[in-house]
Amino acid sequence: MNDETRRVLDLLAQGKITVDEADQLLRAINAPPPPQEAAASPKPRYLRISVHKPANDRRPEKDVMIRVPIGIIKSGMRLGAVIPGFAGDQVMAKLRERGLDLDFSTLDSTKIEAMFAALGDQNIEIDSGMAQVRITCE
Image (cartoon, rainbow, N blue to C red; front, side):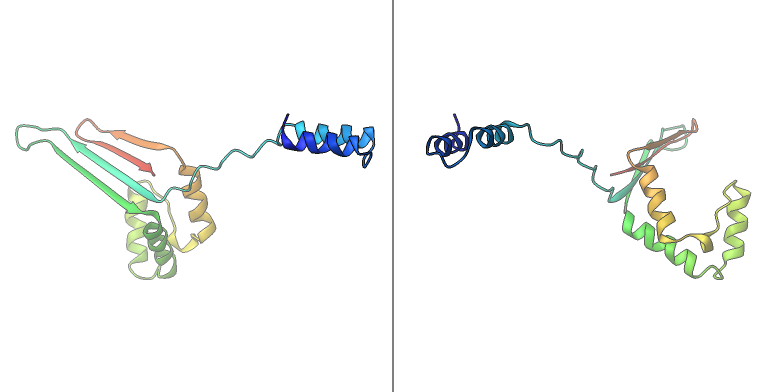
């Protein structure tokens, strides 16, 4: 018997509370705790890009790992949205040539946050046969 139960029974024995009140208190004491919300996974702080190029007859095997703070990426994206005139048309044309229709002038902080939230625990893995690229958030 724990201290709280003992106190409730002592109060009942002393006549300070009724049997119904003691019953309510004992049920409250012994009730299971309310379920807690699942702990949200921590926000990713870094974007890791790993590139592995296998060796061939002209060069040895090569591994490159880049770990960039997401804050810097967000700042750079915002900067691209603020100054689209700085070679903006040329950059947009090059992106479109490669199949990316991305307009930095329309990006705002909510879209950037949504993009990183959507990436979440996803891993992006690309194997071209000549190199393997893996992009993760951590």
